[in-house]
Image 1 (cartoon, rainbow, N blue to C red):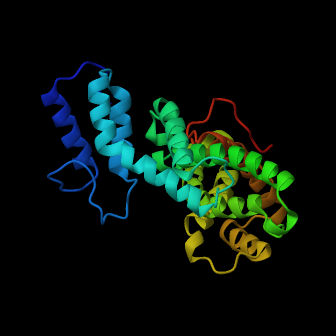
Image 2: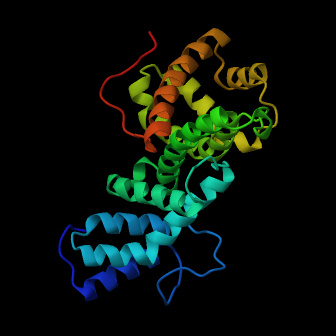
Length: 269
């Protein structure tokens, strides 16, 4: 972690060079090429961490302008168009600038990348902000406009939920598997319980290669691997489900996923 201190221009240049090297790129100039489709990269995440470590406003502005401004603008722009947040009574550019300003208000909270990627964290913040303001304006629009100009068959919230599930649950599942791997011995004391839980996690790890997601078929796979009865598997899964629900709730509302569990334990008796 970079120490919080005043930095000279030469030191800033060195830190910027480190940011670029961490991204695995070989760039001779700061900024972003127009053809690069990966607008929010590991370089962006490192730049946000660097920005938060600095105390000098001049240095912070240099890092922001070079590495963060464009990704934030593009992130908000894509979210607005992807989820069709068009029910605003001000111009599109004003909406975008307002959301980017809101991201800047929250940027200081992103200090620990082990809890989740910066892209997911700021995407959730932007989407939640837009959902609240978009829906408020949509309701006003419905109350004042003729019914025939409104597409009543479209469920905006369901569309948003489906898109969010596809974009976020894949990354979250990886985080959940990591969390369970680190905390199996805390959640479970019996070796059999750990073996069952690990068998379930193995299905999660290989979910991209599983064609049949039928519940009965998956139970058979776990039972064949562990040699225990279905009722026992269910008891283990129920504890895993509780951990999943708690962790996912925090992830959806904060953009973070805590990977270390408190000393409080849950055991199968």
